[in-house]
Structures are given as structure tokens and as C-alpha cells.
Image (tube, rainbow, N blue to C red; front, top):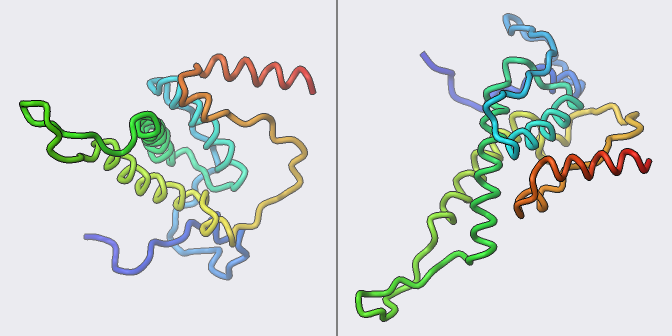
Length: 178
């Protein structure tokens, strides 16, 4: 039928990192820690988000090949959210609705306001599932012996229309300088 009431179970990988006494659940499938490949059909902006998110969840040790669909949804939603947010940054949250004579009747909210708000909720849920929010990450123990993380994607530049290729070229230049 369905899951009984109560909060969703915390993934075993996160429980282990937290040092929980509930590290071993009977009957829970133990999947190999294999990182899913980026789907080919994602566009260049979505692939950039994929690379960023995979790097993060890999470090937490919570990603499995079966997580590919959830990660893909995250990438698609994040790009849509950023596009709608950019529209609102450029146009504001409302516009004036005029009658047939051109006289202002009332102020209306752009549809992008609702889009941004709804997608933000969905993104937050997915981020919580993968331990990517401060609250969900607070109890996760991570190995901090990483010596170099590499350059980060400039999301604002990406949202302002710069291509992923241009950003990746900049990353290569930074790597050569180091």
C-alpha cells in the first residue's frame, strides 16, 4: 500500500556518517556507491548543474546510481528556477494591467513569481534528500582532508547568458595559473 505515517527515513549512508546506532537496517537494499552518469539529453546549463551537484553529493558519500532521476530533476528544476528568477530580477514581481482604453486597472503578479516559489520548494526537498542544506548537513560527518576542490561554477555568469563553454574555458585558465 503506502508508507506508514511519520518522517521519511534517513538514508543509511547519512546515518553512518552521523555515527548513529541505527547504521544497519534489516532488509534495506545495499547499493554499490556508483556515481550516475550525466544524461546526454540535458542541455548545457543543466549539465553544468549536474557536474556541480555530483561533486557535492559524491563528497557526502550519499549518491548511488539509482539516484540519477532525482539528480536529473534537480538539474532541470534549478535551471528553470534560475531563469524565472532572472526574469523577476529584470522585470520586477508585478506589472500593470490596463483596460482597452490603456488606463491602469490594477497591478498583477508575473507568473514567474509562482514558478520561483513552487520550484524553490521542490529544490529544497531534493537538497534535503541529498544532505545539501545546513540543517540536513549539520549532523553529517565529512572527511575534511580534501586539499583542493577546484574552481566553482559562476552561476550568476551562467544565468546572465554566458555559455557553459565560456565558463569552462575560464576554469581551464584558472587551472593553468595554479
